[in-house]
Amino acid sequence: MTKVMLVDDDESMQVLIGQIVRRGGYDFCCAGSGEEGLALLREARPDFLILDVMLPDINGFEICEIIRAEGRQVPIMFLTAKGDIVDKSIGFKAGADDYLVKPFQPEELLLRVNAHVRRRERERERGREDRGRPDVFAVGNLEIHFGKYDVRLGGEPVGLSSREIELLEVLASDPGAVFTRDQILEALWGDVEAADPSSITVMVRKIREKIEEDPSKPRYLTTIWRVGYKLADRL
Image 1 (cartoon, rainbow, N blue to C red):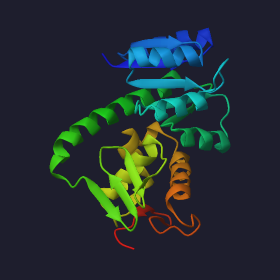
Image 2: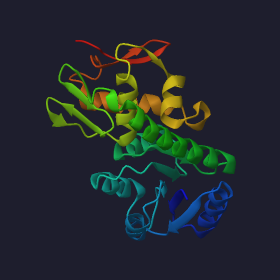
Image 3: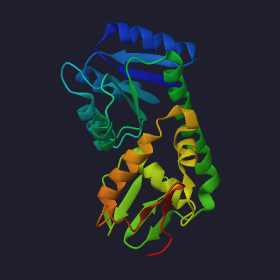
């Protein structure tokens, strides 16, 4: 059974989220601190992880960075009472896939969990279908290695989150073509309503900071005003 894990020191939140995800048909486990959460993660190997930002020992951002440094690709969603764009930027930079602000509606939480789980299932299916596809897309000094969560610039790995890499893979699936925000949301979350459209703006900005020589004048990842984004097919 697909397993959802929560790291949150609020016992009432543990009970609430446990009820929500179990009603949705998922297995559930939880931890009340960062250290306990990291130990449980390695033992339980969940399919989806919900992280509270404010914890008694290690904050959620640090936990996310540790998980990504270990090479784990489990989808991670932050829970926080802070909803401003600064915190979202920090979260996505740490390697988060999604962000949900407290208080939230149970239906919204379950919608997001469902979307991430479906997306992972589609990725596995696409992996089987795309075995004949080229393994690497390259333009200029940028290389995107499909299905390996590996993006390189000038031969060196680029420190992108899993969701940022997935965004680049979507664009690289048809280089030169323009993808609308809705198309990107559908591809990454499985449901246009399951994510905040502003998260695309944040991710694009963070990607540009890491791959563009001058992020204010992007060459690889460009914006088509009032339409969407595209990845250059040539420079």
